[in-house]
Amino acid sequence: MQHNVLILDFGSQYTQLIARRVRELNIFCEIFPYNHFPSDLSSYKAVILGGSPFSVRAEDAPHPDLSQIRGKLPMLAVCYGAQYLAHFSGGEVAASNTREYGRANLSYIKENEVFFNGVSENSQVWMSHSDSIKALPTNAVKLASTHDVEFAAYKIEGETTYAIQYHPEVFHSTDGSKMLENFLVNIAEVPQNFTPNAFVEEMVAELKEKLGDDKVVLGLSGGVDSTVAAVLLHQAIGKNLYCIFVNNGLLRKNEFQNVLDQYKGMGLNVKGVDAGDRFLGELAGISDPETKRKTIGRVFIEVFDDESHLIEDVKWLAQGTIYPDVIESVSVKGPSATIKSHHNVGGLPDYMKLKIVEPLRMLFKDEVRRVGATLGIDPELLGRHPFPGPGLSIRILGDITPEKVQILQDVDAVFIDGLKSWGLYDKVWQAGAILLPVNSVGVMGDERTYEKVVALRAVESTDGMTADWVHLPYDFLMKVSNDIINKVKGVNRVVYDISSKPPATIEWE
Image (cartoon, rainbow, N blue to C red):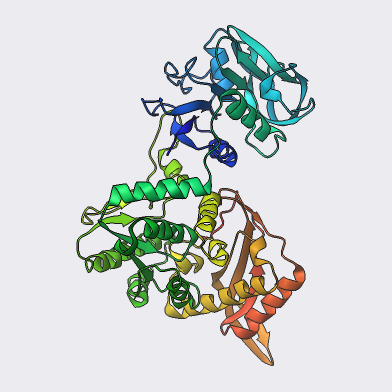
């Protein structure tokens, strides 16, 4: 895999978004903490310095070692990066009189400047800083201003170094992608060769070389990531891939058999293991959400380990890890890099003596779907909503019983089937039902009832980091509510969750 672009992370919430915008240009890029990036930069064509919640004037401000980068590789410094170059290279950064946050418009652009090709004056950009550059660094030339920020963009003569005090990666910077393209393609001359087809060809070749004739075991979930990983591996090693699909008793209604049926036509070697009773038995009496997650994780590893031992000489465990998982595990949190472990990033107990292979670890979710399409995977499977690893356990608030699982499966089926029949499923990023630990009074016929309350949740998002509730039609909500109460015994009230993330999360536990 060609590295092409290195992005240095200083702890900004927008760092992943920079990478996504670069990838949209068919340019491969990687994110590394500012104080822990590769020593060998020979394969990189350009470097981007990201933003940061810190002030360059603070004692604990991140200080990158740019000795191997500046003046040697084309560099774009964004927000904190622009202020860092100014503050430590002969310029001046001071606190702004007012926090410069939100929309602004370019009021001046230097003529005939490649960085702003195709960008008109008055173009909207997004500011997010409380400091401002008051004097440019040595040998710098002003490229752009806004009404409130004189040095919105500059370049350093004698180097291929550009700096901007706004965020081109966010949606509100209307020509942001064009500016990134101008820098990466027209100035840094980075090749635009990162396509789904190219990824498949390179990854299959890499897997063949790495795995040889070794056997690999993969835990399928029925979701997009594990399915795409399985098909990629199948192309590389064929019959040496052994897929295991575990029913933890907390899947959607009929999902265990439905997913197995879907995989039958894909040529994969899949074994279904129905361990629902084992999981539910271990979960009996547990109400704490974190304990539920840990219990499910432990039992899954035990079941998976039992099954993998039945395969002779298996040497590798394949996982559907994707790039946000990897970034989360090495991202900058605070003045120094701290490591936050992720369940999918090298998380194996010592007794499982398997090496790990993660063919999707450099892809974002939308890229995984595009690769899946290139591999010819059924669009219906690629379009499936995300589903939590712990399954319905974190959508049943309180303790878990087989009766509660049955109720929630039935409710969820009515909701999801309704979204599909109304043509709403593909307009929603994720949807599901939650069984609440409360009963409410109701009336059915001439009888008084005291039964369960369920909440419906539907959100729109691109990556799950932020999400807005979906404004589903009232007619649909009325119909699905009536269907649930009439068809699912034990439920007499339905509510709709209209919380966004943040401050709420997508799941309730």
